[in-house]
Image (cartoon, rainbow, N blue to C red; front, side, top):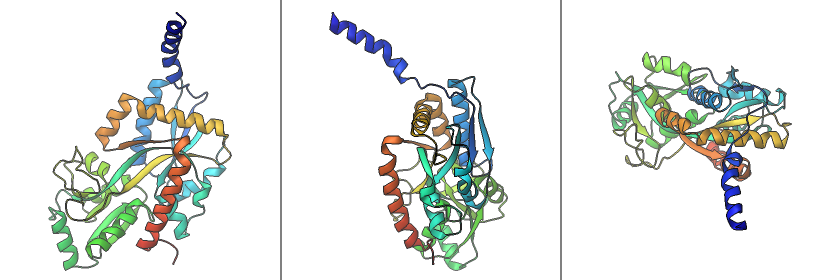
Length: 315
């Protein structure tokens, strides 16, 4: 009987324990890139799902773009450390930028709370482009060094690193054109103002019919881009991309950080979030409080080595 009662109690309490409490106040969600890019799309997904879970709470999205995200991240620790001010953060950006030395923050100044998704690299051209394959693009780039231009989101960012990697791997010289964010870059790509973009699978998926992806940096083809080969299929071992997460001011209490991590994990677990992410080409990940130190230590090591190899560090 005692055993039966215990089992019954656990069953009754399980949903309550699994439910995440709503924030006590509205959440100010700061974005380091302009509206329309992957970071903004992800924030809007989270805003939608959080509203469903917590109808009384508003997620107020604020924008402070500039310096490839570096403007906001340099000011992150000046925000109120109250657990209700969170900022979108990106890897490898927060490692690459301080290594280059042109931003006013260090990697250790950033306090990550939760990494929620990952977007693989993709080489993309306008639908009207004469380059129908990666081989076409490489052939054209070799025939006219320094002529073809590729856009990307920010300097010393995932897109910038991917561009340098593309040139290095294929022995070509193309021009990298940095934009404040993917939203700004989209106009240039769709208008054929540039020859293409070193962007992400999400960009190719969200602009399907307007752009053509030539290759993706994944282990297998993306289910929403079944006709696009991976770099590995084409003979290059390239599986990489960008992580997105949330950070808080450094003085934010540990308990507040833990609550935010649990809240964002609950958002990721929501069926609607999973559907939205899949539709937009986002690969959900869950890196919270327990995994954070080991995750960041590994990524800082990997990206520091990568920055040196790509010449993105201080000269």
